[in-house]
Image 1: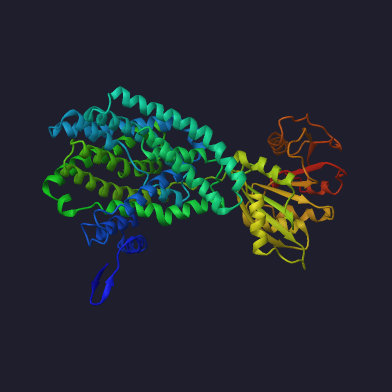
Image 2: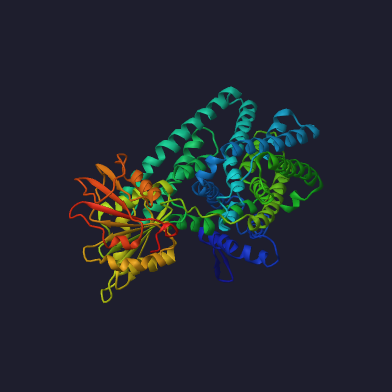
Length: 603
């Protein structure tokens, strides 16, 4: 520390973090008042505090850039985590085709610019590859607008891995041939092997290891979050072992945990919060630290920057124009695809620095690329804000049985069999569970410590959700009130011996159309067989539940059916009134499935 007028001028990591997070807090607020996207405020703020501005963060600082790199990995992980796999699977050919187009056109433009400037072929190829990649900087805008599952957004996100991998292949080939570290064939073989290993470990091994960890420690909120963090960092490291950018590994980790971290659950809320509040903004600030206006805006730099801007942004725009009729994109979907694929940041900067290190690029080219990064992020952010508002709102998938399950239970929590039942109903849809603990009037409500303990017991493995108390004189009324606030796709009620069926007649008016499953007794974890007693109503729901509970499903039967040992009986009722005359077996479990309200007999 230095001494100024008797006072010590502070320095060190604490000061640096104060300055960085002040920019994260104030940068977006200030520029948004001027009508400029908040992302630009982070870039400008990074310049202001950086070595070419006020110098609060010196040129030798590694802490902020490294934290920024973590933010980039975090961004790619969240993109894979939130990607709607159903939408991606339905549009996988679209994603591949779009990836090839949005890579080829900017790549060709960059190659042409390099040759026009008189560069050698390796430098021109490297320029083309860095222009063809992109970084999902604008993805949070679509996520916050609730448009992450849109077809155009999902296609662009899915195309990211292929475009960045192709750019990486070109980068590795050029770097290997120029430095003599290996022939192009050897380098490409190493990358191919790395992609295979990454796919096997990431998409087959990681989900199993993560599920084991979540079952062991997942009831603890911090442990659940750390399982996610360790997962994407581990795959990023694995990717780098084979010379592949860590962002590819982080994205694969997101895909691997996609079904284990429901998008609407508390775990996803925590992951998004830390990403949006800390890691991703710090990455943008770290990019701003590199800006040097005295060099960036010289005539020579601007000349090259103008050419590569036309090649990059023009190529990305032309790719969208070509892909729109081929892929059937609407105008807003095409705009969203352009906003997602035009920003240049991580992969672009990495390839540029490699080119500089091996002597293919000079300082003028490096600064021209920084101009490209600044302009592309600004333009794409403006476009993203415009088209995120124009995309149609997502259609809620009412057919997803386990999208959001409401589980009603008494004090002490559900039995192990009921928890297993809900887990099997929820997991295929990657849904969440809202647990309502019903208290009768006059009974003490669960204190927060007991609520946390119940959450730790329930939410292990892929099961994720929250617990809240509900006070009511009767169970059906509590269920109806809870259903109004949570909009469930399925209601599961653990029915006690003292719960009178006559009160259920009032529930249909309040259950928001969701099927209701009344669970009597403690269902077996692994049913010997599942038997369906169906009078002809609610067959679809009953059959779907039967299939999820066990592979051995007996043929439909009618009349009262007594379960055998290890059996589960599903009885679909035509109306709530029929519940009063439904006999309940003395042993075993009876699931009474009441179909959605629009199919119920009002009489």
